[in-house]
Amino acid sequence: MSNWKLTSTFDFEGREIKYDIKGQGYPLVLVHGTPWSSFTLRHLILDLCHSYKVYYFDLLGYGQSDKKEGDVSLGIQNRVLKALIKHWKLKNPFIIAHDFGGTTALRNHILDKQEYKKMVLIDPVALSPWGSDFFKHIQKHESAFSTLPEYIHLSIVEAYIKTAAFQNLDEETIKGILLPWSKEGQGAFYRQIAQADSCFTKDFEEKFTQINTSVLLLWGEEDKWIPCKQAKLLQGKIKGSRLVLIPKAGHLVIEEKPAFLLKEIHKFLER
Image (cartoon, rainbow, N blue to C red):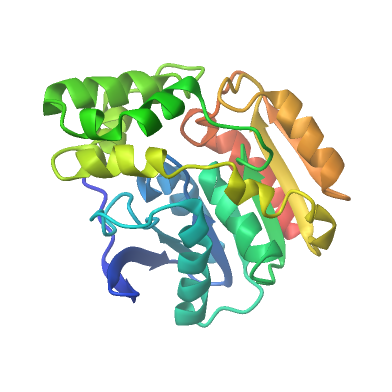
């Protein structure tokens, strides 16, 4: 799976978004987070495409999408999602989103008024404050990080992504996550962190009552990036939402416990 390739291209304001579609059935959109790409959603995609028509893509500045200089903040990603849904001619699809993908889905639903039949949010970034000391350090010294020798840069990224998992990640998974951030992707890795800002979640934090669809929250019980106390706070803010904690899994639960996630996702979507 380290040769993960997206085969279709969408032009978003002159910038290339790579995407793909698999399966037949009711439409379902998948959105990845940071510093990931659609590669980390492969376990979900390859299962869900047997029951649904699955639409997935790489966020602007990530994966195989355009990684040139420019806006790659959370303030633009919901606009990318909105444009893709229009391009795909979808009406009221399901959506499953992880991490920053959760932010993007919430911004798209609450601020852009995109309707979803149901929403599944996996360890989403949804409540301020967020952003680690690592984020803050890069935001102060982006240019220094973006010009590091590549082997040092990749060592930093590998060490960083390992902190997202409770279990050990296998070499194929690490290789697939690192690949988009090598070579010309180095600057893009630090750019998306430098542009991360809590203002993009504050935009909707007082508007959770505007969510008008069923929401399932799935959370790694050992998530160190966004601890479970955030999960319980978020559940309290989204009326009628259901929270399921996944044992022995961290923030990267989509790699650690995909079978557990899929069982809960199928139950929720089919209910």
